[in-house]
Image (cartoon, rainbow, N blue to C red; front, side, top):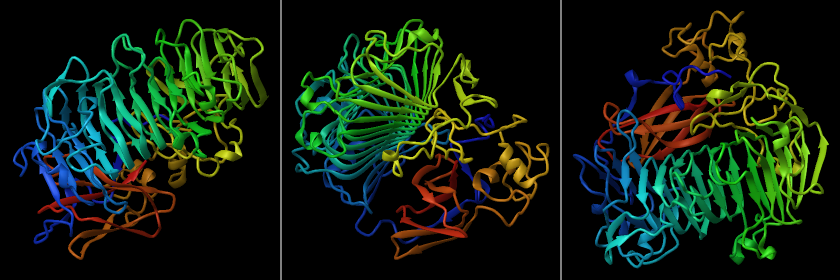
Length: 600
């Protein structure tokens, strides 16, 4: 559907008490969290440089806040400590008022002298693998809200061996090993690999990041993302093009339990390269044989390397290691503007299978330029929209492509505005209400519940009981005012009363914001509002707010709303009407501002 302008429709709709009435928690006599410690880095803070933080002695619950400044922080470090699930170690950037993230730059970076770790040349920030602090398996680590850049040749840094050049496969964040690792809302750019995760990692979440402009000129071995973990989820990320003349893939992965959902992935040699591991604990994982790719927007520009969008199976040549399982590929929107041929899948061997359903696969070239598969394996198509005159394969007329049921062909799928990359559906599109049932094997854990919205947002997918084909569900907006008809007609008799600027109940929230919040725009008592804030035991803050069924909430925080944007400290909180109660560690600051928001 058409959205209200970006200025009026931020990533999270601020509801409850807005800037003129923020809920403020004053921890007058409490400046630390029980055994946890806050480290503030930046101008006019206790620590001027990142290197002043005692990284070698961080404990569970410790929080490092890095404040945005005009100049980048030219520093690098390792995190080799253990948090716990209820008390992770958090490294959090604090953006300035305009939302600019603090920048960590690898060029001429220095490292705290108390840190001593190997593979310094492999990343700007490293997790796991150190002499000092003593080596361990890092656990429960969160890195969020940082712009991390410039770890690649010819750039160099000063480390334990003095002046050192980065390796070609250096990354913005290099995870050598770790358990329960979250990378959230970071920008990863201008490195060999944007994000690199080695086989010693498990339960990794990459969420809401912008990963682009990585790679090494003339090399196929460095990528925007290169990961091999025992359990990894990518969601709400924007993967942009690699650096010019760089030949790597966009998202390359060798993990067990790989889930790629609700992302925007544009350009690269291939958008997705899902291949084999050479580590027994991954190969033997029961999740190695099933890979889930759904709700993504995949864009293949003209001239962008390989003409294949998704490679699944293996690339080592040792077919015993290949995935030999099922790629569940569903409710994606695939766009190719190549003038020549486009191939949707390459399956590496006869033992790979793809269950392909409910996808839009559109090429600007004539349909005969679109092939489903390259050669091997078995592809089964159900309820997809495909460019008319598509073919099974450009290279093997005997390729196994099972055209099962419900597939639709056409010249155009019915996008809102193709030229401006608005790939939502218009009224009357053949894709509306024509999605088929999902494979039973993906339910309930991998149902299509959300969708990607430009950029790095993952609102709930509208559910009218009939699944549409593609990544974006149609939501009727007849008068094109950015407000769904279903919201307007629920509370008003026609589509003229609710406008992008109307506030019928005068409660300070616009009608369309109340639509997002699930509250009644004609009743000032129906609102999302913080009812009570209290501290417990001097180490926790408890927020109570009015809530509605079906909504998801986030709690955001800022130390100073006049100087710094709010950042999320908790999210994906399900509504439990009539009220929600949520407890989180009290920010050990003299003054902290919390805001409850609705996740669209």
